[in-house]
Length: 90
Image (cartoon, rainbow, N blue to C red):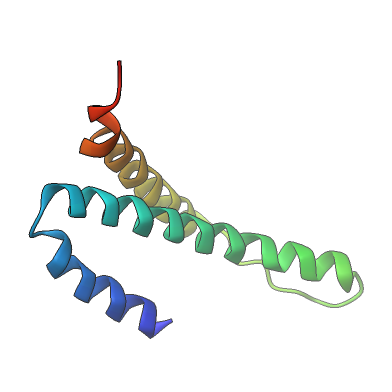
């Protein structure tokens, strides 16, 4: 997990050098972030389905909802403000 944060931190320096690179980086990073968030929510549900008699802790609450809203907002903003996308729109 720390490797992910290190890669994002180092890629941030590269992303701020160019507008297109920054937009593509934020699009990819937000997509990975939402994927990891969805997996963190779905894995306990899958474990519960596979082992229904065990006590499985489901950790989904207000922090996860706020995290999802922030990551989703950045994903939408970076998608619609991406120069590669807006260049080809009619």
